[in-house]
Image (cartoon, rainbow, N blue to C red; front, side):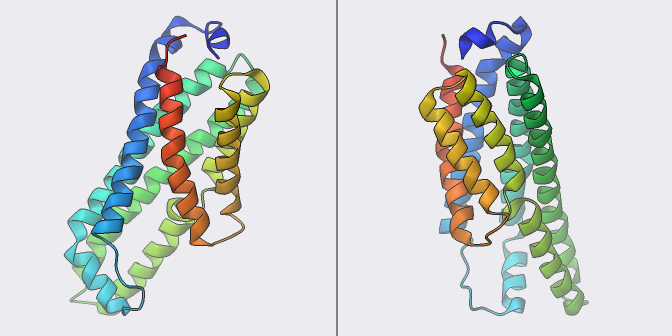
Length: 224
């Protein structure tokens, strides 16, 4: 990997360890979200919509924190990593890395929009819950649709970015064979969420994401 990196400019190489820290930061975002939703924000599936809205309003601050951490901050760290990786590997396979970088930035925008929708809809639902419960309920379901479609349920865009990155890494030896293979497996899981709405795939994408971000972080930080 470092043989290829040495062909690029010194500025990009200097950012490599910082990108590694950003990857580990994204893993910490995932871990924190799993902990919050598993221990604090887990609600029974059989409660009514009104009860779900009441629960959302009651824990609005914590929900907004998860959107800031899991979408806004995460997307900022991801944007930096996409930029650094695109600059490091573009000379190896310029067309493929150009496409990968494009999908990486698409993923950043989608995640950022998801976080903004989550925060703004929480505030709107809270303001309408008493004066207009029907409107609050409609916004609640619209919120679920948008969040699940963009960044909470379908991981297709992120899967494509990882697939191209994994394929280029495998072919040119930019990462270890084990990490390249794991990248391709994780990418396949993300792409499959486009065709299957099963929550198992989404959970698996998140769990493997923790491993992948930490692994990538170590690979970026480690000196030649």
